[in-house]
Image (cartoon, rainbow, N blue to C red):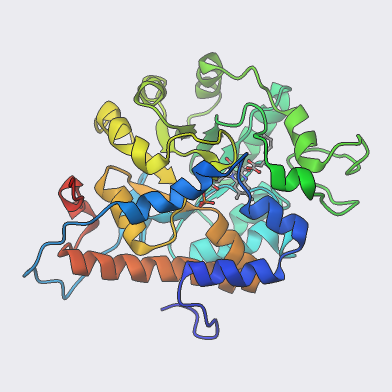
Length: 357
Ligand SMILES: Cc1cc2nc3c(=O)[nH]c(=O)nc-3n(C[C@H](O)[C@H](O)[C@H](O)COP(=O)(O)O)c2cc1C
Ligand SMILES: CCCCCCC(=O)C(=O)O
């Protein structure tokens, strides 16, 4: 059950409440998308536009939302997507988020751009951590991060490929995001925030490698035996290449923060599922705020979905308990949606659930 002392009935209410407590810069950074935010809106609207075909007269007295991702048992198929800078809104930052993921039987993908160390976060969510990589121009820095993630017990690496350069996020051009002076971002290296005359995101941008290509994926594959998930794919062609490189696929448009007017993950999913054809696992994110959204993504071929902003809003409102509330709401809504669709197990969710018009 959702945390009783939090009054929010759904993720939209949490978003509205978080907007009241976030600083203008944190709100611009978290909530904003790229350019005209067409993709940001479409991510959410796409779920509402897709209609369900429920089956009746099925015994739904017992619903099982459990599943596995990369062999890891999950209580329900929702994880936390990598998000930079949890410390903008809560002193425990990624550690609080990780605890909530562990307590709900979920999984968390920790961003390279975190406030807390890989080791601290792994300790908070034993066995339930993936590590997201932005590849640095200086590969020795990335190699060291991979070794630390392995040693800390991360179960997979998530390579983000849709941000070779930073998207044009006009909200943060107006209200730049800055980490507090003196803050050490453990995976970014020592610096004095603002000393380069850049806002913090533009500074991150200078560290990352815009020349990233499929050859680098082969390099990464050779660096580790951990499963690699390529995050930010939107086409069958790229998904097939990822699988050929021995990787899993994360369908995402980066929450509408990179290429505006890019296709939504939900719309891209069918062609990607067709191309992958069961050879790898597929995950998805972007705009998920309801149990029915989770159900639709799974019906179209995702093994699990991930949420970013909803987790950050929970963190901003009530720390660890707030993130738990976000995840509990999604789990309970998914269970209800499954019952009303006449489906009792995750394995039963398939394309027959989606109305084609
Ligand atoms: C504030 C914020 C920070 C993010 N930081 C990262 C990051 O460090 N690495 C990454 O791969 N994706 C990052 N993302 C993208 C998310 O992982 C995810 O793809 C997207 O936000 C999902 O959409 P949702 O916010 O609608 O759930 C970030 C998103 C937000 C909102
Ligand atoms: C591409 C430069 C850094 C981005 C850091 C965090 C992120 O992914 C985001 O969406 O914000």
